Image (tube, rainbow, N blue to C red; front, side):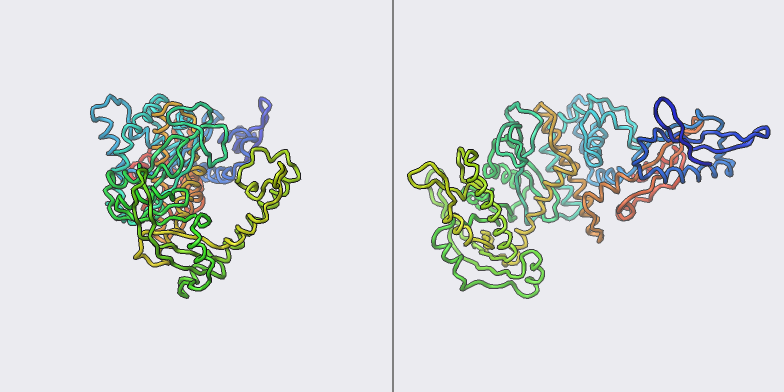
Length: 567
């Protein structure tokens, strides 16, 4: 048995052949057609397929119950790759009882004739394993073994409308299921905002032009506000018009926490983009506390005097300091200022909040601040050499270090602004209304804000939530429901693995799931399955999820039995 390359129609084809003797002459017969050589060259699984096929042929000639005589090329079909790893997510899907919820809602006074559970799950796993358009999802639906359902393209689009209509109830349901199933305790909530762009320049009620965090200047966008718990699992989200500024999203999110999830006692952790005085007032009036970054350079003269006065600074205790050294550098100190934050609402009425302002200094941050400033100063000098680029001067980026010369229209380097910023190197401030929290706890909670930043990175890169190609508002919103479900499954799987001592990144999880494939072939009308070699943490994932892997070689019917047992 050997691999043979033949020429046909201008291409080279790879085939597995064997020699046999007939009437005293040596002849060859084709056992398997791999396909075109140019498409197989970069496929690392190719050599494994050859080896496994060799094992199959030997088995078929020694096992009388499976005996197959291959007489010609037409007896063997081309190989088809079928993913079975999706059953990991299907098991989570059913443990969260998403299937039950969707089936119940699809029959509640609606004229939905397709299987909303299966269509929703198809779009969700496609978003997880290989994000693509709904049209390509439809064309690729048969790649999942045992999932060859009679689904048409229109059902995918109609399902998006359906998901949009039940989004609010689905969120509440999933929050309750997570709390019951995983004993989820929500005492700290991280909140942040990002923008998601469209391949379009047509604005409407939801899509609009605004400040893009993806630097997409000429494309419309929506603003996404996301809530995650301290384990990095999503709690809920809201969509806002693309021109909504970060600080204006807080009211709706707080209403969601209070009314939908009935969460009464939490601390909200957010970055400085959400730190407006009105937001802090709204948080406290809702009965919640906050930990937010403070705009130190905008602080009062009295506060700044305290910041730069070295007396009163403390180090963290030895144990905490050693743990924090990698984060903060070889020198880290802090000072706590107790103060009353006086806030005036739109009507001029005063509202007082007792809070702690935690001033920190980090040598690691000081080095970074210096490097960032020197880079901007260098760019500012380049602008001075090319004065035509200093039109419409704004005090942003490198332009913050330029100023007009007195009585002229010429620009010069603003040495005073450079020296002023230099004083703040290494300093940072966090304000909190949770006065009974230790400094270590406050700093730890704020440092964990990276979890939501990581969440946005995962959603934008791994799940490829952007760009969006849908145009109706309902289907745009339905698309986000699919992304939310995919993100929830992924984060839940990470959480379960972490609890079992298996730290596996989002990328490695998806690589492992994507490698769980069958090679499906048909010999004389009978289908067989060869298990492809898995990658990364596949074994750990299966063991933790209590899923027994398939045999190396099975009939099609045995494969269906394997899928049915493990769903």
